Image 1 (spheres, rainbow, N blue to C red):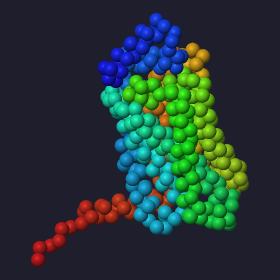
Image 2 (image 1 turned 135 degrees about the vertical axis):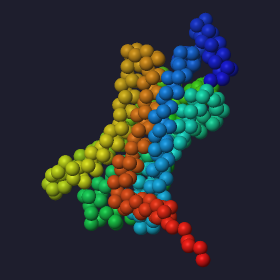
Image 3 (image 1 turned 45 degrees about the vertical axis):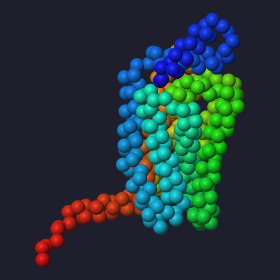
Image 4 (image 1 turned 90 degrees about the horizontal axis):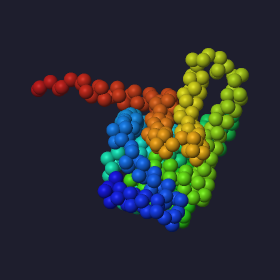
Length: 346
């Protein structure tokens, strides 16, 4: 954080001790910023950069390859499941890039203009919601394909799938857009918070903000929670509808392994929200201190919210036979080019 922002924090903290003019939001904001600036060791914060960087490297290695296969093969990109998969992977890649950049800048104490920080936060929220909503759409697509196989093509043709993807992006922008409008209308953007642009700190400030901000935050969290519940409900219905078909007899069958992998991914989507609910409840009821809450928020943002983004292409995308076969053929062609003998001199 810049020297100017640090001096503002100390000045406001001293003024707040002498007068009761400032609002509760400003008191909590500047107190939290002072705690974060003065009492958080840089070494420990930089240790939390390791998970996002590792996940970004893994994601950059695999996600562009899957996207290339999807968009370069006409027969693949015309199928609904692959179009939704490509959209989900694109959202995950954007989130990994944006969040890792945000975490690195925050750890390096690089100050950002207010507009740049707001744009970065909004883009992160859109990318996260886009990946989550697309994952829910993929589960619904599987649900329709299994339970209504004869009407599947009529229900979800490729032209309708494109409209669904556009609708998913609109919903992904609308949900955080409403939240940011509430923040802007209630003047809940503290200048030094936006200069830091540290997402764990912003989450904590949201939990201690005005009632309107808290309500918008929890409504957004509940909307995401409902989408995740819908995913698990669809998987449960699919299991009970198909358990007599014989595909679940062996624990090592393709259906069982796929079901386990998909639920593992969506459990990691659930876990950050569950930890956030517990942490906010304990923090609001003063069961845990501010410093503990900061470390829990760092764990949520830098570990739990990042993991499903990098697990998704490995446990979900590579399970498709067409994509894995196309990737193997690309690797095989590349090896043939590398080991091809040089032409004989004439």
